[in-house]
Length: 242
Image 1 (tube, rainbow, N blue to C red):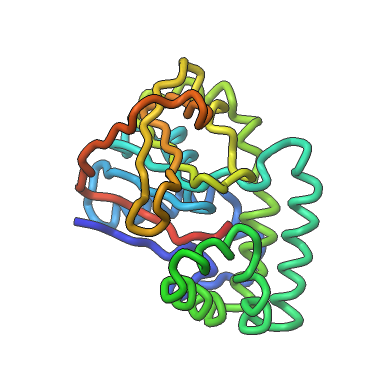
Image 2 (image 1 turned 120 degrees about the horizontal axis):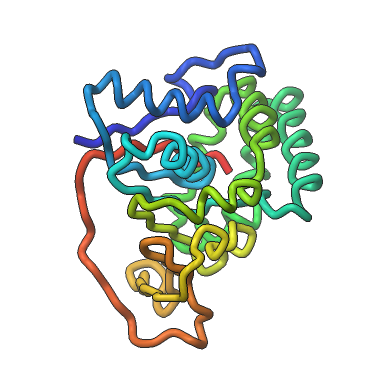
């Protein structure tokens, strides 16, 4: 069984008008409510970008409900020296959603440096993403930018807690995800890299993957590629939000 959830502000989920309905802990509570509603005592949890933050916090707050965690492309804006600029950026994007609407914002937001490589590698997939972004709820997107993105605490403030995670944790970062969280933040042990070469989309360009709290090594330090089978099972996932 796979359950894919839409976060608050992302129809068909509700779009509460109250900004207080969008804190990070609310996202964690929503994930628990989904598990309860499905009658699942625990699940394999997968989060991408904004959902990766929620997945990590769910793992910290409710480890008994999480079998394993995948946090992909997670950490943008978390660095302490980037937080002020990140929050100002979120406010500017939120204001644009309010004044210009989702379709107009999508025309430039979908071409940001964190997304243009998707367009280069998979034009059809990027076009579907851009169309979905243009169809977002403008109020929901603005509230998400302010309440979830700008309002969330830095993962660096959770460094000690993250280091104590015992739940199996897979941290995935693309080879151009420079702005994402330094995976060593939650991975205090020596590097034991696993390298997956995404030959189907970009020959020779690897995805950087950490397994079980082990940070990636620099590309120059890596040994032969290691591959492993995918594991399937119940999972809860949130859509990308940044």
